[in-house]
Image (cartoon, rainbow, N blue to C red; front, top):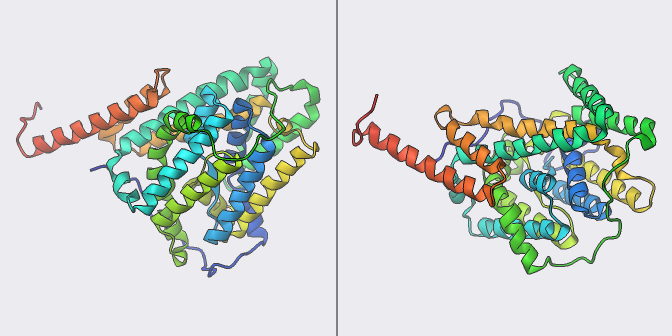
Length: 400
């Protein structure tokens, strides 16, 4: 039996809003509480895949609005971190990405409808989940420092150093999300630098036809992107998010099944519309809540921002890459990667070696490295707990 992965319950509950919407100052502040994570991942996916930014931003925004309307609480929609990290680090075309989203959505819908979410999540050892997170973070961290921070030579390193210093020196008591401030810093740098920071990527501006992903793309997306993502989604996106929702918004009665159904439907719809795979993340909810979001209004505002961003790109009023001087984007991605790697500390000390081994295997360039890491880590975990159990009952003599 695996170690519990649920976060500790908080003692602070917001005032109940009875499902009403609010668009006050707190909702506006909370709306951008997670933008420092979402926007760099979206930009990284766009740069690595050549997906049309207009559609990606508009679909992402529509899903935010739908989530705010359905849940009536700051249940934000986020890019799937494992999928994003793999696409940014290894590359994948639009067909495989939408195919992965469709596969993930279909699997999650099947699990939610069959009421098998909780049972299946118990079978995935916590050290394996933490190890996959560590491996993804390591791949993303290496990429951020190598290809992003170092892309502009010594100027890039100076920019990255300035951005890192900005993060370190920002007061902990600041009521403005650090990611949003860093994003604004990047915009200011790009505006002042102009042609000094050219991009090496060309983004597709004309959307392809909407519709069902090709069968071969669904299969490839499932193997390459969905398989590493699903264990994380079961352990973190579903269980941890439900616990947080129950802690902060008990009056809403959000269940694991409801989150699973929403997760599945959103990904199937996103795939049909040509968007990226998404999830309901506990980190996204925490970001909105921390900076003032208490209703679905903060998520609706957030969605409207991304729709506006997509329309601005479509009308030619905005070059989205102007938001992201590559060295600053590298610092933002490295920050996200470091947070992913740091989750290994939440593993029970006696099993951290398994998590570390899984992470190293996952981050390696082995063919199907994540599959190998998951299989090896799970086998080692169950062998370990079986051995410990037999030793505690005296069936195996202690070597100590």
